[in-house]
Length: 167
Image (cartoon, rainbow, N blue to C red; front, top):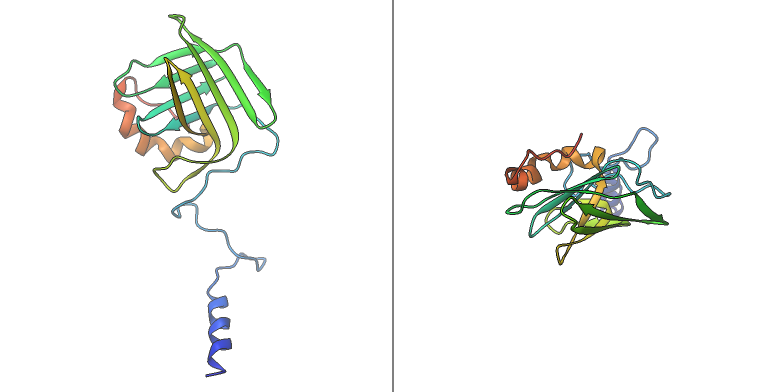
């Protein structure tokens, strides 16, 4: 029996997948709970960004100074922001639609869970618009597009124009 315990530990250790250098191998990219790429150490909001939120489902795409909000049962809203107020770990956009309605979008760098999947996003999102505050998660469009085209596109793509998440 004394020989069994060390042998069992040795066998369990041998089951750990290893990378060529001998360290533990990372999980497969399609493993449940696979995270999107981590937020950069320095805040970089220069690329297109997609934010999403659950219940009610919504998506916001930021492309330079153009913002597009898509929600089921609401008209799509196109807004323009003169730019973002960037501070360490945060970006704030104050945008206006053609009808004069205002929106404030705040992105904060840090892990975010959408509460509906096992995904972790590198940013959280808060949108203040039309008397409501929407909460969700965000990532660079190039990172999030392929992961969400199926799930989010099916959920809200029929609300207007086809959903374009990049990628």
